[in-house]
Length: 203
Image 1 (cartoon, rainbow, N blue to C red):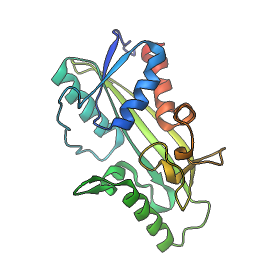
Image 2 (spheres, helix red, strand yellow):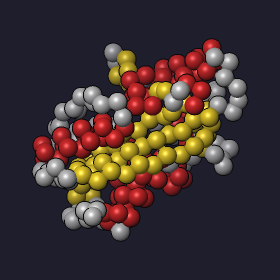
Image 3 (cartoon, rainbow, N blue to C red):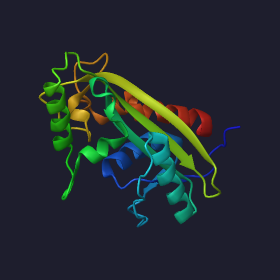
């Protein structure tokens, strides 16, 4: 039996401002206020798992236990078919630099690997997102979403975050980074997972 969410405040277990803003927009119609991990001065737990669900569980349970609030964590990434679904769970790692995350570096690395392999066009990829909603008592619910598309180069657009400028979702002729946030949030991998979450725990 899926546990229903009761309350009007949820902790989003992320320090990523773009992700927090996206979640706030998604929750707004449901009368739920969001608070971010940075606002609660929570440390970022080490993501030691090799799956999206494993890492999302680490983040959600750590935040719920630390604050006593239900916590929602997301682990997401991009899978490139020709690269055996890399970077996948290591998407953020490909962007790491001593000065913080640089997704231009990650996208350039991805493009370079595709060129080195002589990967044919269209270069298929998918964004995947796993949401874990955890309660302080240790219970959790898991929801997974995805969106398929192709990779473009050179990158296009100024909106969004992460790999958005490189990803053109199926059925569209613009990248995620060229879309208004409302349009992207309606079709994204996170929106897919979020719709399942709302239906199960809030609907």
